Structure formats: C-alpha cells, structure tokens
Length: 241
Image (tube, rainbow, N blue to C red):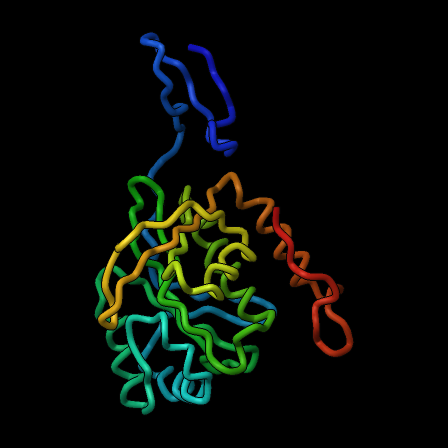
C-alpha cells in the first residue's frame, strides 16, 4: 500500500491505497473511550460540577436578567421564573442521552449549564451542547476555561477521538465561539431539524485528538494570569490555528 498523510481537503486525516487502487482510511490503533459520568472539574476561574436542582436559584439569578436574545437559538425558553428554570434543569437531568453540568464562578455560584450529548464511546465521539451562560459568566475567562475543562476531560481523561459542537447555522455568536475555541467548521446540514416552529440548518464544528494539544496550549496561554492586566482583561486575544 502507498500512503498519503493529507486528504484532498488539506486536513491531516491521511489515507492509504489498497490492493484494488482504492483510497481507504489509515488503520486506527485505539480502544473505545470511557463513557462520561458525573465529575467535578476545577479550574482557576471557574469549576464544572454535576448539574443538580439545588443550582436552580443561582441559575435563575444568572439567566433571567440576561438579554432576551439569549433564548433565540435554544430549544427551550425564554424562562421568566424560577419554576421555569427548574423545569429546564429537570429536563436536562431526565434526558438519558445527556451528562449535564453546572458551571460555577469563582465564588461557587452556578452561572451556566452545559452537557455532553450524542455520546458514542465505541467510536470515540461526543458533542458539547445545551450551553447557556448567564450573567457573571458570559464573555469571561471562566466561560472559556469551562469549555477547556470539558474538552480536556473528553480527550485526556476519557479518551475520545472527536469532540463536536453544533448550532443553528444562523447563530453567529455560537459559530464564532466554536472557531475561537479551536473547533473546525465542517459544513451545514440543511433542514436538519425543526424547533420553536422554525427550520434549522445545523452548522457542524469539531476538533480531534490530533488537534487538541495545540488547541489546549493556546487556551492555557490565554488563561495564564500573566496574560491578565490590572483591569482583569486578557492582554492578547485568543488565537488558535
């Protein structure tokens, strides 16, 4: 067999030519990933903990004062009461395909939620989704660190090969966030689903275990206290790739 390490798209996927002259994927020396479960991930600016109904009061305080547009691209909401936030959290906890987390600020208050979903340990893929970041977390170092902690756990502790991010193709902030965090855009699935009575074309992003070392190093450098000025702002922007 002959071998080429770069695909036609330019990605470092690699392929071989078999005895029939056909291109095939390279052999994979890999074992199934460990299924994710409840875990606490501690960082400098935040922590990620298993989601619980006890987080509802803090989440209500973080979500309800936020901009009305924060609910547009979510399958749930808008939430205007603590009872409605509790219903959302209960839905996360009852979903058998979710491993759900609360994101706590440095003071231990729940400011956001996220989940692992579409989990397939046999082939090593999972998605991070269901993300909602409230007041006190949105656009902070803690928000970036939370996404890094979840990705690090997926690759380094659980052994997944592929980590996905998907969003409504019209959700410009989510698309920007994915690429800022090191996910690569992979295309759009047209008419992928319907939610809130609207069509959704879904934009797909992903990073692989081969991407992860460089992505992780860039995020850690951005989060380093040496990169924070006296006003608490990062001195240099996060650039990956």
